[in-house]
Length: 135
Image (tube, rainbow, N blue to C red; front, side, top):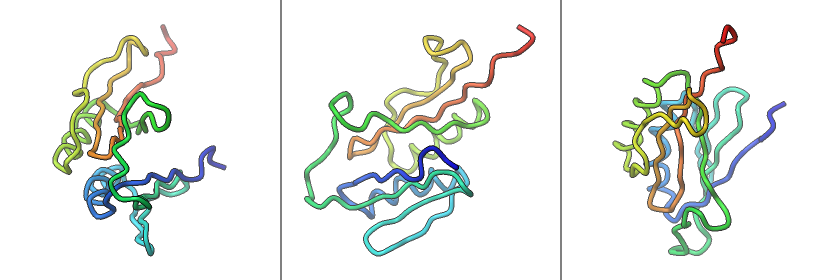
């Protein structure tokens, strides 16, 4: 059983949120499902991500570092996959917070990029392979 069943994210404009999230989540191998007043993506038995429209239009954006949302990290299989997904997100309208690079403060193997949308939703693509057991 997955630790997290689903994650709901409120966006100011659902159509714009779909335009931002769909290319990224499709590139991650997720299937999209539209419903009345929301849209969701899932991949097999992984956790589901659901976008909902804000009840009060214009109440965003969330400000990174304040109480609430911090970021959502997507683990991927390689550095080149981090780079590829970063480009897809930029093309979908996300803004780069940090370009793909190494983060030795986390581990000497950690490679990631960070992006944010106009609602203040921040995502990360990261690759952190297991430590070489021979070391």
